[in-house]
Amino acid sequence: MPSHARPIEVALAIGARRGELLSLQSADVNWVARLVTISKSLEETREGLRVKTTKSEKSRTCSLPQMAHIALQFLREQQQEYRAKFGADYQNPRFLQTGRQLLFRIGSRRRS
Image (cartoon, rainbow, N blue to C red; front, side, top):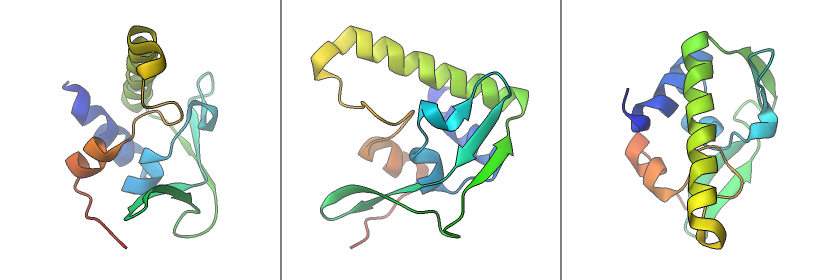
């Protein structure tokens, strides 16, 4: 599976909105129990990326199907590889998979 399809697979499996998916951090995932807690959302504004509450303003915990769990593990491992490879130049310190490129790849539009 292409690496750019993995976040989409996870979003479909857990019913996450784009911003909710993009705001996921390793701390939001219980890797052993295969659960993910969605408690925030990421949006792009003219000032840059901003973390906000979810649309419902409530957090929820979702069970991860095996394929989504594998996809998230792949993203985490990929991030660790990039961090090791690029060191101080690595630009993605907080989120499992984020940034302007992914926002636009999944179909974002700029909001004010």
